[in-house]
Length: 185
Image (cartoon, rainbow, N blue to C red; front, side, top):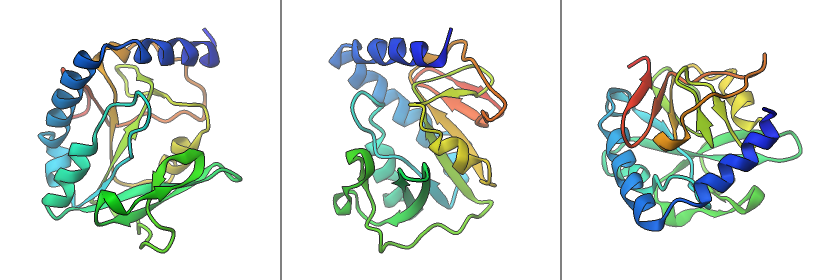
């Protein structure tokens, strides 16, 4: 199946999740993230601000701040389909950015890549090897190609399945769902 067709099907599937189920899955997923050894040991968390039907990981972002971890969120540049991560001290300081996704202010400190950073990678779906299907922009593939820290893919267990991959696709270290972890622990 082509990625574009699969992407449409998975977006519809995720949109059909009942609100009560989504709320329960989000709570369990957040708990699974903050108890993962990679999250616990990370000094810097590269998160994402959830939009639409994405898993609501805002409690994870708040937890990172409460634990005095350095929290960074992406700032996207559509012209080059690249992103940089900028420091965030509070979620209420975000402003609408590219694609109307809340982003840190452009004046916030940019991440200097370290081996102690953990990147939470959103995906429509992942396979059990850590390959992801995103929205098709390639932002995370470009960023992760030079990222030296650990990666956790974030999605619902119902979205784990077979993903078509190409030569430019990169896998994450571990996929975390509300039910279990897949990959290197």
